[in-house]
Amino acid sequence: MFIDFGIKDIIDILLVALMLFYLYRLMRDSRSLNVFIGIMMFAALWLFVSQILEMRLLGTIMDKLVSVGVIAMIVIFQEDIRKFLYNLGAHQRMKALTKLFRSKKGEHEAKMEVMTTIIPVVMASQNMSRGKVGALIIFERDIPLDDIIVTGDQIDANVNQQLIENIFFKNAPLHDGAMIISNNRIKAAGCILPVSHDLSIPKELGLRHRAAMGVSQESDAVAVVVSEETGGISVAIKGEFHLRLSAEDLESILSKELADSE
Image (cartoon, rainbow, N blue to C red; front, side, top):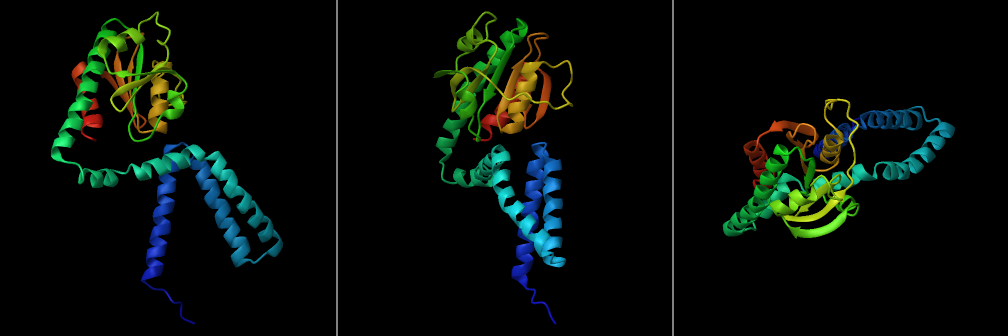
């Protein structure tokens, strides 16, 4: 008996392999790799019991567990699923496609607008670094931060150096929270961020740095931190820190991550 195996079956296997690989990367980045491995082991056992051994009773029980488990998985991993869909829509190839429909003039104006946002943040960070004033500034990118914005006080103002320094002044009521910048405007301040519990974060880094790491792990945001203890300037991007930055370093990183991605 010959098995009918054609090009369509090869494509089918490749697509399933790519899907599993992407899920593996997503779970690894969200620190849920052990859960992913457990799910794959259960799926393999389910197929072995129901399809190969043909154990009807145990197979039926596992079928019911799988049908309920799909709903449970959606509830448990709703944040990861949302991040996956946002990343899919914000893929670099999708961005490249949208650039084809944008004129050179419009692209230049967009980059200039981003730079007028970056410069006040760099200048304010430099001044706050000299005075050892703690600050946490988040740049929203493709993944919306609406759930974080609502935890703070809504501002919706132009990005201004003096406004940034006044918000993070030591006696100001919004000093301890995070500032969110979205679409080149200060959307909110005093916001609460998810705190990373990553053990690889150096112990000398405080809560602001852990909050910056947390938001950079759960989204594509760029987080700028000014340490209240040392005055050091840091940036967290995609779960990685850039520490002990000068004003020039900060401007270079923000320009690369924000202006060049427009």
